[in-house]
Image (tube, rainbow, N blue to C red; front, side, top):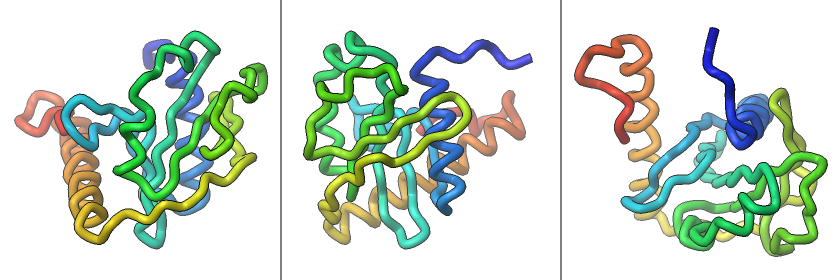
Length: 149
């Protein structure tokens, strides 16, 4: 039986299920650059990159001082919260996803800020490399592939 998921991980699972149903490939806990770790990075069918930060409570959100540092690595930025979260705390210029452990719904589309071509290429390659290493780590946990980015 898998270990119990923390509240933020449950939100991420629901977000990933929803985005996958829309044709996105998703990675949890993706590191776009050293010192940054996004909860969900999603690569869309047209090459678009979305970042989703999952916040399980007010304190979780108030303690997040890095979210603006994620903006240079995505075309759209979203918060994912549950139905009890005080959404008035979230900046209106960001996207909003309501989620639980089983699914999600985009309730406010994030504005688009298209990445420059060179940054997009770098991020898509990093996404592919990260995903391949994770798959290898699942297939061969004792091998050299591991879970690293």
